[in-house]
Length: 249
Image 1 (tube, rainbow, N blue to C red):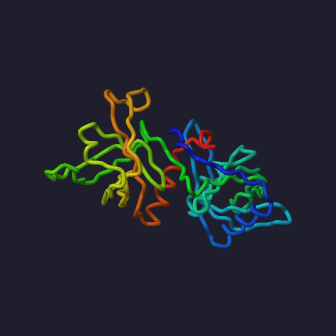
Image 2 (cartoon, rainbow, N blue to C red):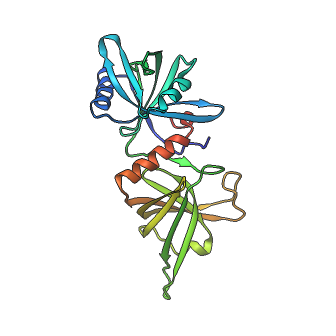
Image 3 (cartoon, rainbow, N blue to C red):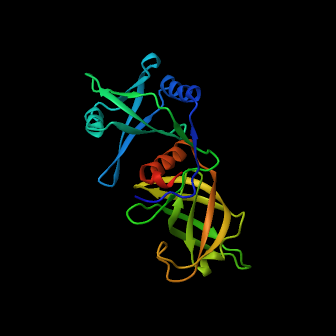
């Protein structure tokens, strides 16, 4: 499991606030991801809140796809508690599993605490190993003789709000803080995500066991300046699926 970046989870114990978020999720048919770690891998099933029974302190969740109903049953088998993620509100919580009813729906307790990701600080995933993202774009240099270079870089980290990659000393001459970069095509799980960005910072990086560098490099940090809402949601859900949430608080 890849590590989280510098994330910020804000805990909320307000029963009124919790019920408001849960109720809003049901009323607007927002997606709900039910998840747990199985053999070191995060397994998820997407569903929706079908019924909220406040007087019984319970929520009924149904899998979105018919063929996912069986997967939901397998996921919760033998579990006393289960983890949930509300991607549109960036809310996480864990709560008691009450039962699986005769329809195969999951009955859970209304949570006593939720954790919400600070919207100003998107959950950031440090990439490496089997989890990767590739950024492709053209960039003009800053010399008197103008020339363009095609970059294809493995991202060092990525979030719903930005990404970074490492370049050599020679390549670093193409970048200055404030530069517009794009269009950028970011390949994630065989899907190309189009976006544009701005250079937020340039940091010297020394070789260490975490970056596999053999020489000093420069980390180019990009903040998205233009990205579609669906593309941003896709990246946020990609980060969630691979992030180690124990490192996110």
